[in-house]
Length: 49
Image (cartoon, rainbow, N blue to C red; front, side):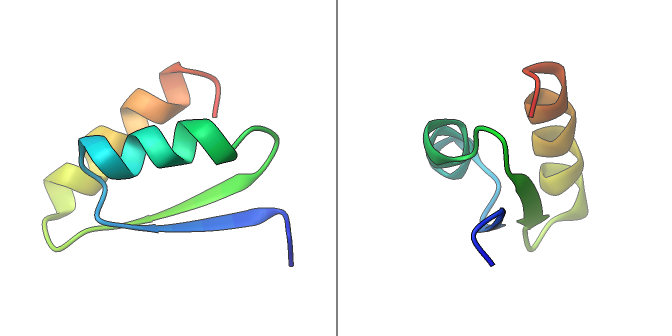
C-alpha cells in the first residue's frame, strides 16, 4: 500500500519527514504522548495534509 505513511514519533523531525514524503497520502500518527500526536495532527491538517 503506497498511499499510507505511518509516522511513529510525531514531534518536529517526524513532522518534517511527513511533510517531505506525505503529499497526497494518508498519514497515520503515533506517539507515546497523546497530546503530541494531537498537536501534530492539527499542524499537519492545517498545512493541507
